[in-house]
Image (cartoon, rainbow, N blue to C red; front, side, top):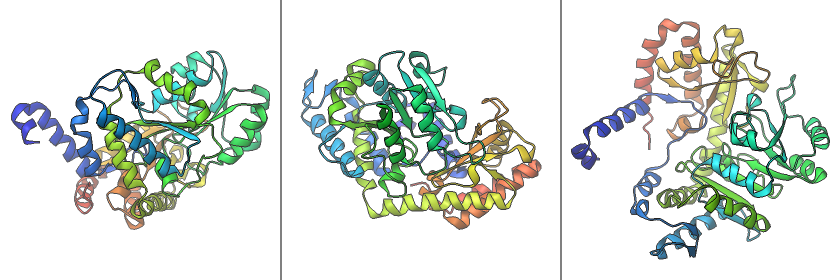
Amino acid sequence: MKTIQAQDKEIFDLIKKEEKRQVQTIDLIASENYPSRAVRAALTSLFVAKYSEGRPYKRYYGGMENVDVLETLVEERAKKAFGLGEDWAVNVQPYSGSPANYAVYRGLLDRGDTILSLDLSHGGHLTHGSPVSLSGIDFHIVHYMVDQRTQRLDYGAIGELAIEARPKLIIAGYSAYSRIIDFEAFGKIAQKVGAYLMCDIAHIAGLIVGKAHPSPFPHADVVTTTTHKTLRGPRGAMIICREGLRDKIFPKVFPGLQGGPHNHTIAALGVALKEAVTPAFRRYASQVVKNAQALAKHLQAHDFEIVSGGTDNHVMLVDLRNKEIRGKQAQELLESAGIVTNRNTIPFDPNTPFNPSGVRFGTPAVTTRGMKEREMKQIASWISEVISTPESASRVKKEVASFCKQFPIP
């Protein structure tokens, strides 16, 4: 850090400002987390300087003796974390979840083939067939929805839609769905209609490794995940597929979509995966869920409406319509009080995604800082106060900053 300060004061100042912002605020963004110091240290290693186009031991550059061992080691750590054998293949090269997903589509499908996925406004993801995404442009997308009454997945209805749509690929795994996913039920639906099953576990990978959510294995044909959310690694992605699909999918990562992998990121992922198989990480994953359930319960005590009535994982959607405020205004108001979140659509939302009816809260980051159920009660109280009494925001911001001092970022 002293080197940056000496050589580039502008960037150094921005880094220090961002550190101060993160230290003094409560991060309730479900897709964010704090990697350990060891993970962050690996990101700064000299692996950042090495090009390594190709697969391990099949490269287009020299100087590969350490990179090949590194990438193979990280692949094996991924298998260990998810309890997999040699009938599964791992690719840790994707730069992020979006190209990982697209590589799977282009590997398994022809353009124009049908994909069955959850609608974005119901908790799906942009790369699962939104019309503004290449996934929605290149493929025929049929969306399933959550049940309007329960706001949960209706596996019977999804199965019926699959029979009607005859998709070649079904996607299970979401960015804003708060209930346990029945991967076995999805596997049976996919098998019945002759479709591949892809499980995008970007949000819940850490919960799965930590035994706080059921695993998509062996029900899926391919699993994609980012590595920085509940898994608490660097910002990257993985593809895990059945060995027989390796030659279809992996060439779509390289050379199909990208060049040399980010070896410093792969090194940091290896550190995170080693951390993820420890008893401490399992306790962390369990606490993430406990904290989410506590936060939801205390918000409900303040008359907030939680979509589907609660949560089984790390995330919850809050329907703000009874509070007479929209998601964008709530996001901005809460941030002015030191509570950082994101606006989000709710199922069957009458409003636009830019200013929807809800906000999304998640507990991975606050749990990493050591907060537990008692702190969730306090956070819910602040959220309620700020939403109901906006003029309290400046005072709450000071209280939040003082509160955060008790819970240092790793």
